[in-house]
Image (cartoon, rainbow, N blue to C red):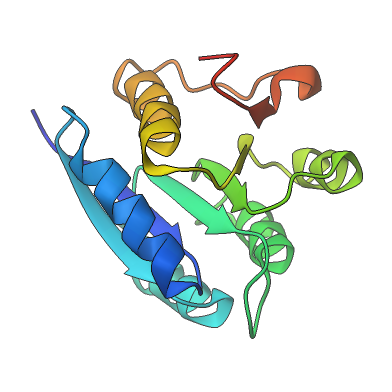
Amino acid sequence: MIPVHILLADDDRDDRYFFDKAVESLSIPTRLTMVDDGAKLMAYLFENSAKLPDVLFLDYNMPRKNGFECLTEIKSSPELKALPVIMYSTYVHDDVADMLYASGAHYYIRKTGIDELAKLIQFVLTRIIKNKFDRPARKKFILSLLEV
């Protein structure tokens, strides 16, 4: 099986560590690439636009270019707009979720412990592998263990 290429954009070193540990615990083969701010993310995506990752987990609060700015740029770019984007943040607010959903994000996940995060990542990756990765209705946009 070909590894699922995951790109994580998050400025917090601890959050990147927890995400990495969650991914390592999965039974699905993966390849994880990480960047630590929005400007680096966009540079990476445009440099690799011919071979994009399978999914992007994008922190909402980052320096230089925040997650919303990156999402807007990704979804307005012909080369990048098909990339599935999972917003990933410490706080989940309905008004922010509305804005992110309207801008084309696939899901919105709250940063959690490693075990819960692993289950949420597993859910996303399984849908990608099965080619069943469609955007949900807005009411199912905020992903939690209750839905997986």
